[in-house]
Length: 302
Image (cartoon, rainbow, N blue to C red; front, side, top):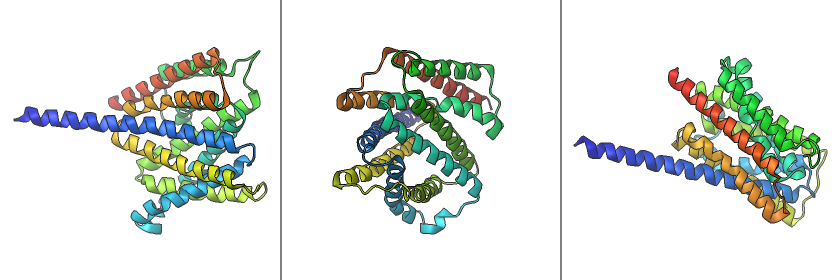
């Protein structure tokens, strides 16, 4: 009598994992669409204004969810300092990513974003008090060798200034992830975390946009609203993926983002990825997956 029940539980687990994988792949594809919209509108609209529209539209799109969760009282928080850190770091990561989409090939911005797990590993020592062993440090070092291949020093090199700005954004995302992890450990809900980030991003970007405002035309306005809506959808899909499936199952499929951005860049802007860039991406992905594997092993042992 127990075998059918066990089979039913296994089938339910497989379905849940399958839906989680489908959600993260869809999120990666949706982020690629948002990146393409940013790249298309960037020549006419300042980067900070794109960030502003993204934040405002996201906040409007999330407002029904906030109301459903209890309205403004749901924004009550016990960790304002961590929210400030997450907002500042996430804002920096968003701005530098949008700047990268405007100035570099989409696939290379995505690839450089894969350095985030490397910085997350290094920063978890001073910010979370974690111990990082020789295996994870080795993966970090190998990952940065992959970055050198992506940057291609010498002929055909990626512009170093914009590339370093994108990498600095990966540092910001790592800090934001640490803040989210810490808030999750003390019981802050995902709605509170996302809502405060949208509010903070709107205030920051709105203040800075006053000094660089460009009135968008109808097509630019549609693209700006599209960036906000598509980015919010991607964020919700990613949240759903990690809600349904274990990180060890879901996280590897985030790397499908490089396939989507490569395809979009090739079809729309004829961006041809260099073989050395692809080799560097492979090394970065391998190091990121190994760091994830060691993290899973460490948590199980703990």
